[in-house]
Length: 153
Image (cartoon, rainbow, N blue to C red; front, top):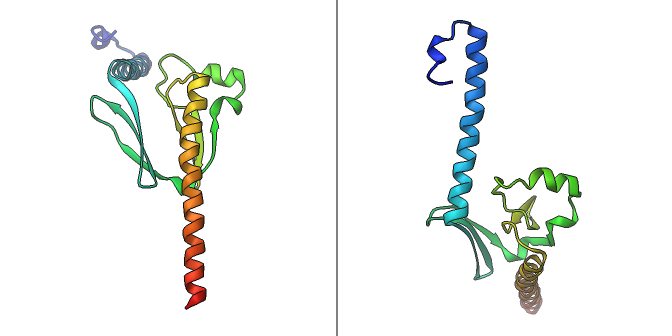
């Protein structure tokens, strides 16, 4: 198609060919990203100093997202909310979205966990949930201590 593009005479046909080529070039880009993710990608989740740090790492590159544990709400497995037909549409093998575990953070929903099995989802929810619970208990204690200090002054 690319080699014969210059021999096309009609403008409408050229437009259609450009659109067709753009679609397949985009699909090639998506497949390249999938290949890189499958070969070199992994997720990094670290919890330190009351902050959950999440990174989709591909050969050392990727953005680190920080989430304060005290602001994490409704930690859940994502498969409970989506109907099967919707999961099948979005669950294509070229999809690199992380969508196994979800939680509410401030005014948005955050998804983590790339294609985790149910047992792995449960374990991740348990571990993160324990840290969130500890952080909530500590923040309640510190609020009580601050209130006592204010009352005693």
